[in-house]
Image 1 (tube, rainbow, N blue to C red):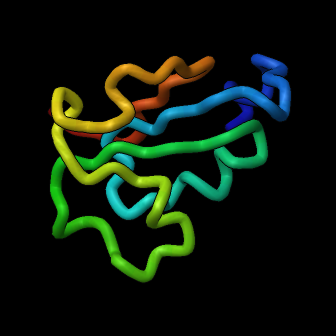
Image 2 (image 1 turned 180 degrees about the horizontal axis):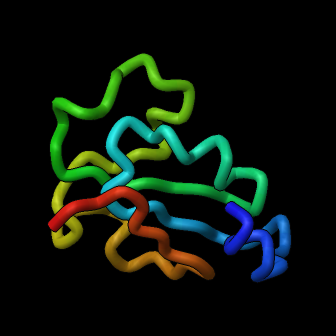
Length: 80
């Protein structure tokens, strides 16, 4: 978060957390702008998460977010 803070993003910045899991970091990232997430594994995403409507559960190539533009894309705690 300190690194992201150093970017001095505007509150209107669009942020994508790729591989967001259950969106654990989305509330923290939302302090820096309009936050969205993509998660391929549906079993990781709770249907009751407060930001659930901002998480696309799909592979990137099938996500409705695939053609969107973002000011910052994070890949936090993702093991390939």
